[in-house]
Length: 181
Image 1: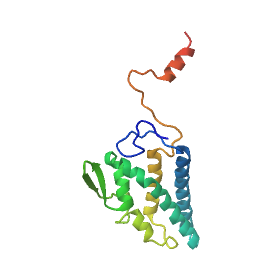
Image 2 (image 1 turned 45 degrees about the vertical axis):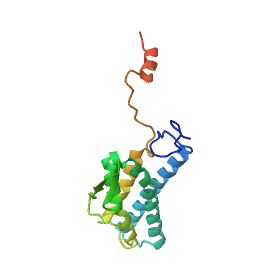
Image 3 (image 1 turned 180 degrees about the vertical axis):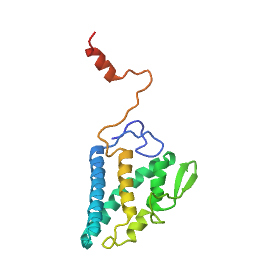
Image 4 (image 1 turned 90 degrees about the vertical axis):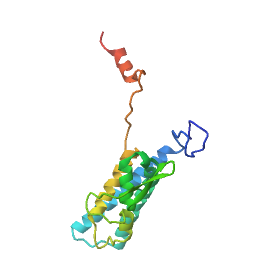
């Protein structure tokens, strides 16, 4: 359920909330956790020299990709004013175009924390056999996924709020009622 305007979720309107936010948020948080668990299991198997079965590799691939796909639309939505999101999208998709509004675009080249697939994490995942190897960039990607989930707000138990000027802080008012005088 949204409030603020009658644009039915179209761009340009004020978008404050929507139906089933808790369900959507929980699903995205679970996908992110599943991606992290899948990566750590896969990486552990490789470090231990264990045979990675095709279903284990397939499950890891799908969980990591699913979590990232769920975050891409929101990263795109706010990328025009957030350089961290721009860089994530560039790493995930390779060189990418960011819409800045008014018909302007910005080309963003990826900067990888470690060696990454030049065409981006999605293509890198598509082109690698996870039964045979667990590349370092896969860890970087799941950290990006976790960071995006945190920054967007799906993984926070609360929120930071800046007080509005000239509006008393309710916590201060509450404390003053019970302060020793």
